[in-house]
Amino acid sequence: MSIDCYYGAYARFDTISKRDAAVLIGSDCIIGDTFDIQFRPYKGSTRAWIVNAFGTDIGFLDEKTSHHLNVLAAREWTLHAILSCVAFTDQPEPGMYWGEVALLCYDRSHESDFDTFVTETAKLIGKGIRPKVDLETQGIASIIQSHGTWQPKQRVPFPDTNKNTAIIKKSRGTLDFLVQKSREGNKGCYVLSWLFLLGLVALVIFALKGCGVF
Image (cartoon, rainbow, N blue to C red; front, side, top):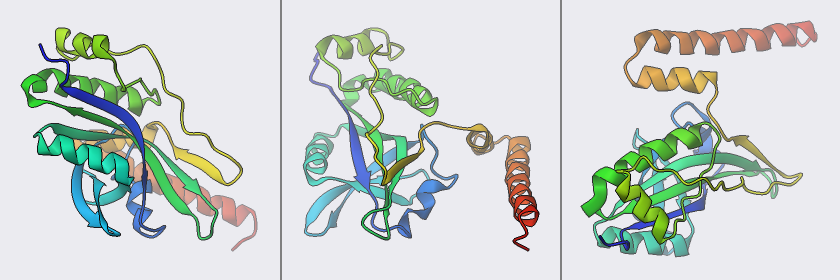
């Protein structure tokens, strides 16, 4: 059994602009979503781009990480990025959205085992739990031996924040649960998600009226 078959890490991604990041804060990108990785030029170098299930660019990784992932892609490894958190920094103006993804990459010779590991890891991340994914030899062996059901006990903290930075997404809420169910074809949850959104809008309008805004 080859242990040189897996790479995992948490990595920061940046967005092109505040406007382009609109999809990142919407229901097409929820914590625990598994994204694809594509390689395209950006500012004179090839970058790894995070792309959601609907084909929309979410952001790009730094040059060093992009290069490493490109090497793994050339070896025909499977590459996944799980959305772990979304943050906003307001300085310098007009501010920027960014976030972190858990990168899980592996040789296709153990694809079934690691596919299961990705699924289970995404479930934990969706709950706001960040398991360690930068694994040593024993951890990688445990994934293969358990056919992907093993999970590390170690946890990784969220990125540091300050007065100019806030984490705005780090786990799935009720609305995200309804969105996920509607994605899976549950029409009832699709209707409920819209009702939930309309209810929030109505609550905001009611609050604004109460404050005498209109």
